[in-house]
Length: 286
Ligand code: SF4
Image (cartoon, rainbow, N blue to C red; front, side, top):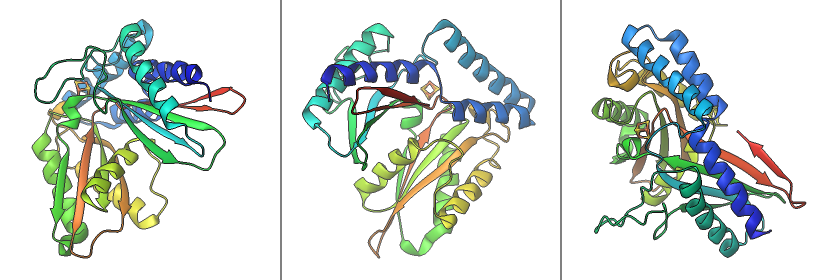
């Protein structure tokens, strides 16, 4: 697959992700505005909806924190070297042309690369999918929500009760910092690295799409309901809309452990996906 085509599509994805929120996110925010009972909460949600509309009208990023760029690449035959160089180049170009705020710095010196790239950034997750097309999802994630990420290694005996406890604890402790209403992307089980990877996989699943296994799907709905009873509310100012969704991905884990990764996503849930087909045609997916 052509390097230039991948770069061009990745720039389009970053533009789309930074300016236009996915339809599932906009619909969830509209529904929250219609059903929120707190006056302050409604005002906050109205401001968020106005902000989204203004970004689209002015063709400007929906939030000033244009985040750290990550890509999820799926396909059967992936040319890693070509794709990686195209995605790095796209990030540099998108930073200049959209523009995106340069956020990527060295973790110790704090020196900013100035173009949103650096060692291992943009993050790229390579995922096998048995298709002849290449699927690329671009995400940009601000620090406000990422900083609230929590890892728990629970005694296995705590089970579902323990999971619910730590999620509610994390949400209340985070308060308004991750810019609620949030989306909670949860990795359950696995090993410590895998549990974070699963939380990030949950992040690219659209809102309202439940886990295919009934027990996990019910758990997602139950936790969402409980989180929305915490009264953290939009921007932490009170109300019944603390989270727009809860998504869980799980893996088997060691009999002596129960790892849980809770990755917060703010209301500015920015992602965009495209498929590049073997004939060169491009399909944009919300
Ligand atoms: S947490 Fe999200 S909405 Fe809040 S400032 Fe950061 S990117 Fe923007």
